Length: 201
Length: 189
View 1 (cartoon, rainbow over the protein chains, first blue to last red):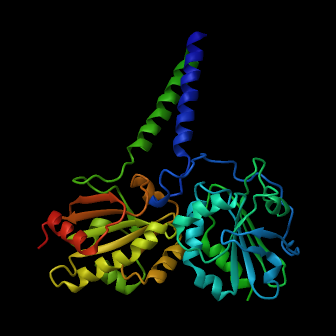
View 2 (view 1 turned 90 degrees about the vertical axis):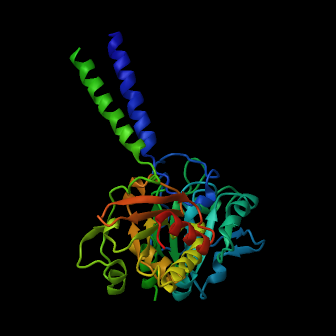
View 3 (view 1 turned 120 degrees about the vertical axis):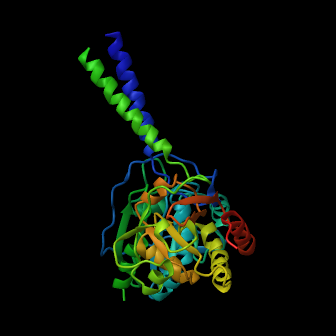
């Protein structure tokens, strides 16, 4: 009986150590080395969808790190809007996601689109986190207070107060054309977003 | 008793898996590259540059060169974005030097990048050497899951064997100095 317990214990330890080994770390950039909190692999999705394709996107106004307030409706009739929710500052994957978008302004320009980056962090945190990414061409918005209110309205607030890793494409009429509530542990492929932008033409 | 034996066997099996995982370290200087297979590029210019023919896959030591410089990068990594012009400079310094042209080749491997993402990086920085996608991180994994940018340089011997002469994380800083270092380590005059 005693032996059995020991054997079971060894088995459990073995499994745990392997699982902890396999957890993905996709935040590769040397830039964020040692700064990124590693939560391990998370539950891919942890929220209930509230919006669907074809819905009118609800307006919001949020403060940005540059100091100005940005409203979704200011782009009505002018620009297509891509909203990129990332879970929180200093978390894996996303610390790489926005620097990637920063590189492809020309693609957004081509489809007459603006990008709005949103997290539930406060402005000083967002400022410190995005500072080493260099000058970002798109507004970075803080959905900190009331906490995660916009994420909540868009159905992407997780039970622990961070948001999903989600992309919304909204056309010039304010209609939601694409929703990708992505596995939080993985980065959405750039071509999937570009394909959706192409459809807006 | 039988159950205990089974549990122990399973446990040992799992632990041995762990050892395999831990064994994936970055290539060591003086050692060899892990087994990496890349797809032969479609572009005729890139095929010529690498000295490859046909389709299918190839391994890095099959590249027609004395020395191959491998950059593991990601389109999403800000340091790799900053590094791109320096590596282009390195390419130009090699191509302009008649003693080195054709003998030192450069390739990039985009860790976790799709073909589209690699292509975006190539176009954005006007990168003249071939880049290969590693969408599922499989190459990245056998290379010890290094951070980016990471540079590995191999020297290819006449018999087709090779050895790693440089394997380091981070920027090469200065194209000219890096080239000097590689010439010294490879014995290329």
